[in-house]
Image (cartoon, rainbow, N blue to C red; front, top):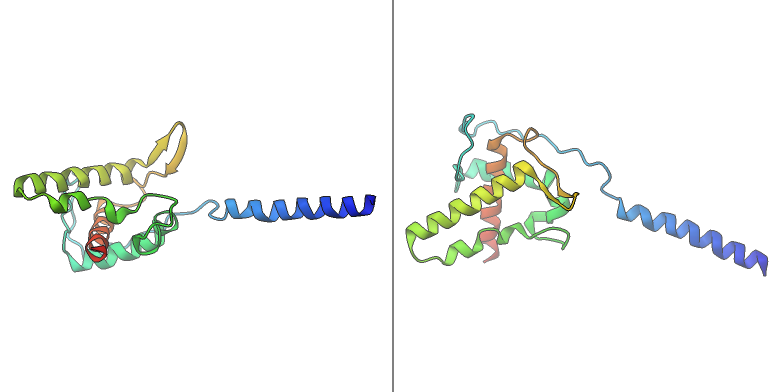
Length: 157
């Protein structure tokens, strides 16, 4: 009987150790650099709106950057796996705005929210939900990722 209990306890401890590793599967993830060669430089001042909206090169760079750096939490091809928000929905509400000036204002507001989020990350009650990427990505890389997300939003309609 003691042998059975010991065997069961050992199996329980081993399986607990094995399954707890899955919770930390991402480990310390190092962001991958983003090569923005070919994109028009934006400069030192942070743009208020996506200057690459509709730019095919930005879309290509943004797709690569997103899938290397963002997909582990926000989902492959921006389709969330439930861990983090579905970024295809980020500015979807702006699409239904009929008034052009209000629509532009909506996109500008969402662009600002996106840029603030990616630059500063997301921290709630001391817990880091998203690390800050300012100093890791240049603003060209950040806007290229936004360009990719806009294309994914359009593809999901």
